[in-house]
Length: 200
Image 1: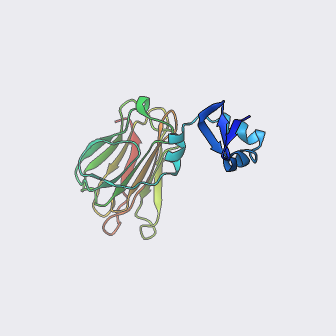
Image 2: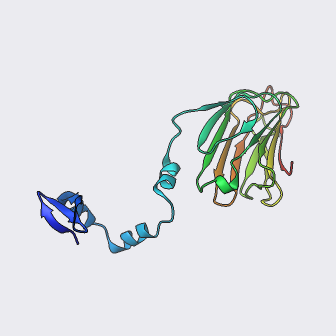
């Protein structure tokens, strides 16, 4: 237990430079042995815990292809054909997140490719594709297979997609990147958009 006492403070490990107050000792007394065991069993760092609850405080403009950075929110104004690479799995940490929000429309026939060659999306990944049914409110979908799909390709088309408000959320699960993409139709939405997981 604590060693010594000076003006309501306790020494830890008989070290006068490591002190806690009486209030802090009282608070420690309210923690059960079970709860302390849970804390000691945690395998994530404080940074990893904080990352899960942190809000983005800034936005990065994305206007051309290139490498995306972990724990960054992008506003995409790129209308031409582009490729965006994800951080390498070897350099990623559980809970790493990337958000992309489109604030421009992908040009007709232009393709936006997300992924890294040879690093496959988790089989929990899904892209929700705007269809031309029921007043633009309906979607079709494509799901990554977890073993061969290392790119998500979004192809722009007039009166189809991908429009302003399209969002992609990438989360690293510890072994693979997971992505959820929700598309917005463009123009009058009379044509179904094209989006799919692929090997290129």
